[in-house]
Length: 383
Image (tube, rainbow, N blue to C red; front, top):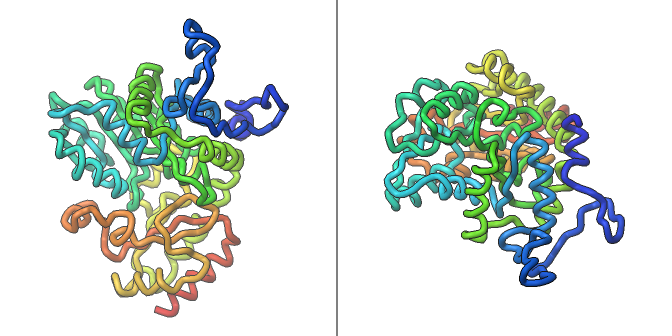
């Protein structure tokens, strides 16, 4: 089946009791067993460990990403945490892209570092930097591409090859592009991580996370953590995400087309100092963006003339774009990463990775692009 067919039909079947075309919400904690000897014959005992609605979503995501299996978690950060817990012990070393979501940075530096786990934040846009950062105790490589918020790219195939040589699992945060545009496992990665809150949901309705594993062995390690920590996704969230996924390709295509037009508009506006979008020929890694993904996505950022004060004024006054931390929804959102998504990243580290105080991040939605451009033009001209 093609991707668009899979996003509708994979992993789900009509309810055998009623014929319902939608997977039921199994809102239960407990599953009655037929006998002691047949314990877990139906696969479920307690919803901390597994739930039929969540399992349907896992099966769909497995098909979309081309994985061996998928484990779904309560949030995207719970998914990242599970990867850390499954593969890192005290005294181990982990390589992470130098530009990552602020929550990932916070989890690594403020939580796991307390327990003796070492982290190197590496410019993974050059795969050789990953090779140079490897240590005898390196046990995990985590890359985020495109990275939040600067959109720096990592060559997934190149880093995966280095990881295989070192016998170290490579996990890729694929949230920004989804498996519709980018398939890390096909490029050699071992795990693909998603905040399902973003494009899979697409409607600002849920928070969730998922890790798609290339092998059953990797998935078993993640599922053990899920059960041990009780971090499973809820059935209601899984059900809503199942519905959102059905329109994933249509939404992402429309949002990305809007983003391309907005980026081209911003590039020509006299009040814009700089605009960054992988679909622009001026994007430093434009060729890599074209070669390892089938689309450029709906995330962009820009800086306005006048610096931080002008950027704040624009974000506080622009119409149609909601000032909010989320991304990937059908509503267009605008964010100030230094204040919001990356507030826990130290100023020196932000400066090192190119995250300026005046950077304005935009998650482009599905509104009429003419209206979005008009709103930005009005706000920019008022600066």
